[in-house]
Image 1 (cartoon, helix red, strand yellow):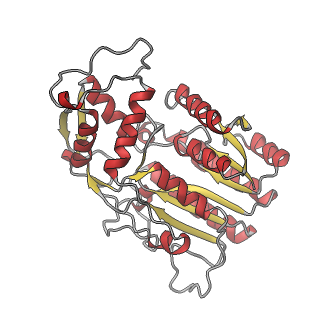
Image 2 (cartoon, one colour):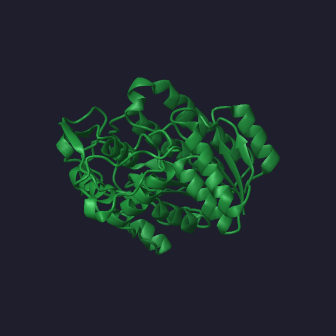
Image 3 (cartoon, helix red, strand yellow):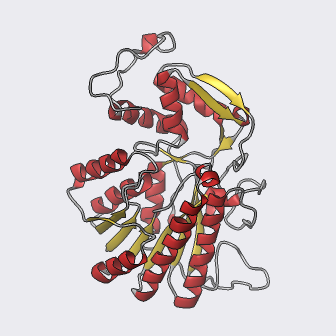
Length: 360
């Protein structure tokens, strides 16, 4: 199929493009390469994909540019859209709220409008586990209500689900929303915990653990995210038979609209997660324990029964193995030396950096 992937130079986007191209699909990538974090990492991801499967069309457009998005759809006529572009980050939304309105709401509206005027077989879009907000009933089920977001970022993701539902109902666009749970792995974002933790450990700088390290997160390895997307690709949602308007199920609809959780289904406390990171890096962290931050949820825990029922797939990469793979990439990307096992936990430093070491 001809598939448009927005956010194609992002963490999930690059992995997604690689898998789709390997599966024989025709992919058009879209990204604005903004400077929320170092654009060099985004370009490196694209190069990584092209080194393995060859060049693919990559257009530099901001999803908030309605005219450019409309023109792209007119020109390319995608059959499927995988919308991963977004302004990410919970804490950043406290200081830069307008970026979330422009990209997450305005940008998603542009995608929906283009899918309306150039009908697609399936629109898959990224939501987030953050939509569960103040909900403390775990594991989080897609059948639960999500009416109490704790950050503007979470509110925009909740709004995306509602916007998709209205367009699905009005114009028959088959829409699947994916609530990702703490995605990690090679080529991850620098503002997320794996790179932040690894950077602090190798530099010997203080590592801030909020809520005194007692948060629980349902970490999900990137390969499990991509496998889920690949299996859902040709499973465009249908109208739910027997859907009850008097007792509506929040995960399905009388429209061709569906919500899935994608998570590891094994929540881990951050202090235990940090211990695994220390093990694979071969050095202890200098930890600073701090209270809970505004916008943070205490625990995340995915119920993925619907995903498994509909696709036959259940996320399967354990955290220890996933972090081992992440650390291997982290060392290679930043050209860090490897500590011999005999020195793990004993050496006060990681040795002299090689000349071409990338900036941490």
